[in-house]
Structures are given as C-alpha cells and as structure tokens.
Image (cartoon, rainbow, N blue to C red; front, side, top):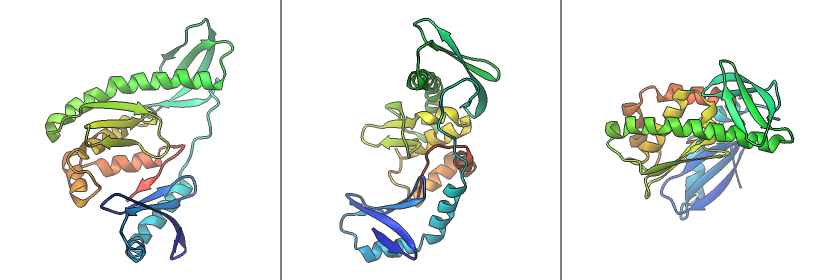
Length: 235
C-alpha cells in the first residue's frame, strides 16, 4: 500500500511493460499494476503526474447513479440496449421463456421459481440477444481495421466491459452490455478489436481509436454515466 498526496493505492507488481492505474468500485480505491523491477519512486512519480485524473474519476464514481440490486419481481425496470422495460412475471409450466413487448418484458417461469432462477432466465435472454448482435459488428469492423477475430464469448464481469486475448485473437464481452445503449456495445467491440493492433493503452492505441471510431469518447462517457452496478476506470 502506498500513500501518495493523501491517496492510498494498492500496488501489484507483475510481468508487464507499462504502469496501469485503475479506479475500482465501489469507493474509488486506486490499484496500480507495475512492472516487477520498477522502483517505488518511479511508480510514485507516475501516480503524482496523474493525480488530477485520479481525483476526477474518484469523484465520478462517487456521484455515479447505481442500480439497486434487482429482485426480479413484477414492476421492476430492466434495460435492453438502453431501452427501459417493465418486468412482468407470469407463472408457467416447466418451460421458461422471455417475451419482449413495446415497453414490457414478460418472464414466464415455473411458479416456484426464485430470484436466482428468474435472473438466470433473463440472463440467458440477454446472452442470446448479444450473440445475435455482436457477429454483425465484428463482420462490419474486420475489413475496416484489417484484423480477424477468431471468436468471441460473453460472460459476467464485475470490473471490465471487455477483454482481448491477443494470442488467440478471441474477445470476451460483459453480459451487462446487453443492458447498455447499442452504441456503447459497438464502442467496446471496437476497443477490444483495436487491441489486436496495439496490445496496450498507448498513444498509438488511442490514435487508432480516433481513426476508426472518432466518437468513441462520447460513447465512453455515455457508458460511464449510464446506471451501473460495478465499473472501474483505467488509465
């Protein structure tokens, strides 16, 4: 643990080339990942140069609206690609299903289904919608960026919207992206695909983002302001 100008930071030394600063939920804890042999004074100097950025994002995290834990009961508001839907629960036979209407989403589940079962059914619905949408985005951007994505997966992640395995050319996307505006999903898809051209968040990485998706900062800002359960910022 380091104390730098009144800010506590957890330092993790790993096999890596660059320093990464993360602002972690829910209270804005600072986590620093740094190369194994990097001296503490170098890390401290780097963090000091980013203090304004750190404080700005700690304040953002403090003020960010957050969704209350869902109980998956009738009357709750749930989101699909940024649109609001009122949840309605209907008892059914053995088979579970989700029906989407103009402003409601119907969850048909067995009478004795509890919160976890209802969540599982709705998550499966979100997963299907993402699997229907993401391939079109990847196909759109592959020729533009001159890269090839070998595969993608969807999983629940607490602190990341996406990850990219450079070696296998496989990207993972957060299941919660199904709840966010569609432009935000595309931003994350492009972000992870750019990692196939530039591994780290370097100046070249952001230059490529500007080239392929000039409006990405607006989309990033929308994503950060949209109600979220967990989120972290990375420098």
